[in-house]
Structure formats: structure tokens, C-alpha cells
Image 1: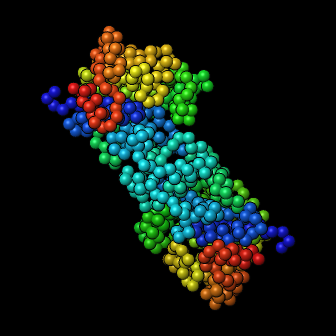
Image 2: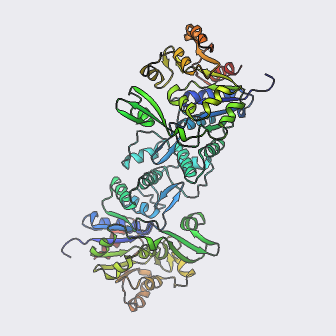
Image 3: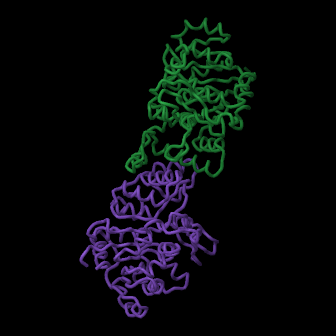
Length: 310
Length: 310
């Protein structure tokens, strides 16, 4: 390309954040990256509006994310959380003191009537993040997990019960009344490259695709559409993606992912250990890109990012 | 008295909290003390419901109050507040990390529909405080300060502008629609001794008296009614009480306080340095109790408490 490409990334939490970090570094300037973040995991915790996926992307791009956990702020303390525990509040949802500031500031602005997209942009800017970060929608969409124990709120399923329940189905409450946040459709249409992060297909990418207008935009955009399989060697890099594929009757492999995303991608990046799946992926009409997809340090993230946008 | 007396204390912040601490120690058991706290200073700060006076009493009774400031939690850290600052939020209202937990827990419960009196009781119990702590009302009452700069919210006047503006008048927004919180009138009627803390007459005691029914209860209760002058040697122990007396045309002395409270007290405790005012106080129909009223350590607080309830 003659000009520096612009990239739009659809992302969930940790995997999406790491790829965002790689893309921000690989592009001519971080401003060429727009991240559309999943807000289906958003919830009111301790009376505060938490946006776990947006925060994970924001902290990672700001260079302050906890490198071990992937979420939260590196070196954060827990005085507030410990005191909440002493006050009798159940503290299964871990929030550090610095992280609390994000939730407090966000909640105050939302209660004052600002849409989530504006609040997110202000927080991003305050942390010095130069890439754009958009919530998928300004309207509330709540991912619900149907299990043998009944329908669970996402954070209850994911954090409190440590995603141990087999998942029968995933639904997105409120999504029919939701609209893409300002800038989301533009970012999909105007991008040179559209990337689906190696995030959970069911609870990170599917909520974004479920927002009315997003799937249409993905099928009609002129952008080259590149996905990264979150399944490597038949296992998820992180979280319950593999267990969900299996529980919902899909093949637990990069090929299973390819079948889910075949209609909206041109290219699917799969890890070298899955090279044998490339012919079957090609038969689906997708071009397989066989490379190292497991992201370690920043060099690794940028190397993968460069291959995706090449 | 044959049985241990029960005491009800009307209190503002630091002065009220210290006397509450003394009373809780001086009584046969801390449960014999009920504190009715001013909530006219309550505000929404950082999107959270803060109750500065209730918290100061609660932390002091729990033995965790900062001994220097008188408010806040001893040894508290400020990671959340500093991060709010980095996120662009003005942080003139200082809140420590442990203190934030109180505001977060309170706000979440209020938003879930619990009345402030129940929330306060739960927080008190969680901190191991055995004396009863009642907000003056479950309805919002907002103390407003009229100054040459216009009408200011209390925290704006008191914290942000460091109570430097001469006060023309004090009003209590919402007080006409407010009712005493459950237990408040009972606590005034059933007490053996009713104590007015050495708190600011205009912004700590007056809001409590302004709640419909409270002043009537004070004039008709059989309790012995004992006040402690917040003015010693013509100066306030803490805060703007002296400046307010002067600005609103009252004598800046224990006698000025006696005139304000003459109708609702039987006894006014004044400091030994003000002994010369005793005859003039007696002429108002009040019995002066001349003693050391400046509270230092816990021994000091309990000594004063014992004299008040003797």
C-alpha cells in the first residue's frame, strides 16, 4: 500500500487487547487503529458500571495493564476492595484501587447523561491512548449464559463460577434495541483492514456482530477482513472458548472457528501447529494464514500485527 | 440513678464524634448511646453518596478515625483519588481508598432502594460499632450557604472554598418534606439525657433541629437536655462556627451559643476559660456547667461525658 493502512479491530478482552497493542505499534501511527470493544460483559458491580473488555484494551494500550493477569492495572493495590469485604460486601469481582477510579469516573459521567462512547473516549484520552476505542453500542447489551443451572449473568458465569458450567446457549439481552455506537459502522466501512481478534467467538465477538447493522457492514465493507483463531492446537489460549465450542456442538479447532466466521472473513490466521487444517479452511472459501498466533511480548504482538495487515 | 442512663446525642462531625466516643466509653455499655447525625452535609461526590458527619462519627466510634484530621480512616491510602485526578476528575474532595469503600457500599445499597438509616446501621454493625447511629432523616436535606458569591452547596463552601466566604444565611433544601428517620423521635423522648454536641450550631445542629418534629420533641422530652458550647474563649475549636456567629450578628462566645440554644436546653457546658459568662447564661434560664470542654484524648472525652450525664 502507498498510504499507511487504517485498521479496525473487533475485540473482546485480553486476546483482543494484546492484538490491539501489536497493531498500534505496527501501524504508522496509533491513530490509524480503531478498536470496537465488546460491551456485552458490562455490568453494574458494587453499584458501579464496569466495562471489563473496554478497560482491558484501554489499560493494555496505555501500557499499564497487569502483564500476568492481562486485565487490571499493574501493581494496583486493593485497599478499597478489602474494606468492602469488611463491610460485608461479597468481593468475588476483583477491582484494584486504581481500577476503581475508572469505574467511579465512568459511572459518574454515565449518570450525568453522557453516552458510553463519549465517556470511553475521555478516559482513553486521559490515559494517553492515541488509538480510537469505541464501545460496540451506547445502549446496554447484556450477555446471558444458559446453563443447566439456569440463565446466568455473564460475570456470574465467568468470574463468580469461573466458567465451569457447560454452556447451552448465549443470548444478548437488549441487543435488538441497541444501535452501533457513533463511529462503529464508519470504522468498519472505511478501514483498509478489518481484524477479528483472537477473542471468544461466542461471548466476545458474537455480541458485537449481534448489534443491528454490524454484520451487514462486515459483509459489505471493502476492507480486507482478517481473523485470528482463538483456538490453537485444539485449545483456547485463555478462557472458555474451547469448552463452549464443544458444548455447543462445534469442532474444537481452528477449523471450527473458521466455520463460525466463514461468511464474514477473507483470511483466517491460524497457528503453525494447526497448519494441517489449512486445506479444510480453504475449502470454506477462506484464505488460511499460517503463522505464530500465540502472542507473548510486544515484539511478538507487532510481528503478528504486521503479518495480518501485510 | 439506679439504672445506667441512656443518652441521645445530636451531632455533627469531628466535635460530635469525639463526644460520642467519650459517651460510648463512659456509659455502662456502648449500646446505651444513640447518635443522631447531621446529614445536611451529605452530597453526591464522584457520583457517590457521601455522608461526612455520619462517617466521622462511625469511624471515631470504630476507633479507626484519623486522629489528626478527625475525619477519614487512619493510615488510609489514596490510590483511587490520585487515579481519578489522572483521569481528569477534580479531586478537591479528599477520599481515601478505605473511605471510598464506605461510599461505594452506601451508594450501591441506596440505589437498590434501602433507606439511609438501614444502610447506616449495616455499615456501623460491620465496623463493630455498638452504639446506635441514626441519620437525622432518610430524605435528602441539603445545607446551602448564602454568601456574597451566591448560594453555595455545603461541600463547595466548606471544602472547596475552605469556608472563607462570610455567611449571610443558611438554608436546608428539602427539609420541609423530610421526616425524622425511624428511631430519631423515640431516641429523643426515651433518653435520660439528651446531649447537643459541641458542633457548629448553624450547619451541624440546626439542620437536625429543622427536621419537622425534632424541635417539638426536644421541647417536650422528659430527658435532661445538656449542650456543650463549641465556642471556647471566643473561638471555635474547629471550623467556621465563630466566623458564622459573627457574620450573622451573634455574640462570638459561649453566651452567644447559649442564646441560640436557650429554648431547648436545661444545661450548657462551657469551658473554664469562659467561667465569667456563667451568670449571664444563668439569666437565660440555663444552668451553666463550667468544666474543661476541649476534648483531647479518650480519657478527656470520657471525663467530659461523665460530667454531662452525672
